[in-house]
Image 1 (cartoon, rainbow, N blue to C red):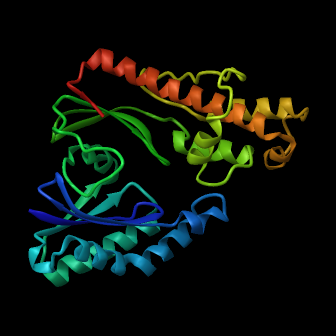
Image 2 (image 1 turned 90 degrees about the horizontal axis):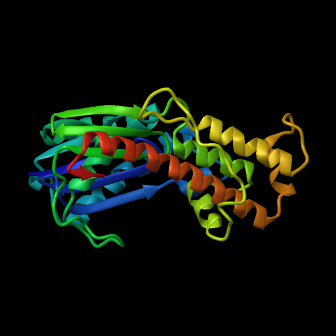
Length: 287
């Protein structure tokens, strides 16, 4: 079965042709990073408008790159959420229109499970990282880390998935973006912090590991605030000093140390919670 898959949950318009859930015939992605950079983050209305502008050309390109026509497509799939409502709407309307006009079945896909099931893809165009030689075996423990979500999921079968832990406030991606703003680094924050962290000393600033009541839960708001308070202290400023005015007071070397210290603390936190879940549930596969 060949499926035309549409994903517009945030700021990327992505269309792929996938066969039997594991082989990619084509994958076309239109990124909006350059558009949103000027605003320091994704602007929902602008994201939705950009999807409108490129949606049909991206669909056409995906079919062309797969060397397939509509007669070769068996069904259509589309991200139903979670995500930005305006962006999701454009993808859903496009998918529904194509499904109706081309007389194809339409399948809604949960955004987070989409992240998980990318690990079942074993064949496709060449990418820097190799495809897995075999598909995951159940039970599966999955750590989902993205701009808007941070959670642990346990899968006992294709029809039995449960969330065993999630963030109670910011997702780790949001925390990276907000810390990047404090340090005066460009959007997207995760990439900027990671690049600068390579030249920094991750042991210079001892940031606290977040604590939450839920055994497998996460929280990143406290870590983000701890970094802000440390930056204010290092700059000799009080807690009410505007965060957006701190970056010019920091030399690049100090920004690198803050980046490395924050990244190390955040990643160690994710790893510790994941190891805790792994030890209890003993999955056959971790993704």
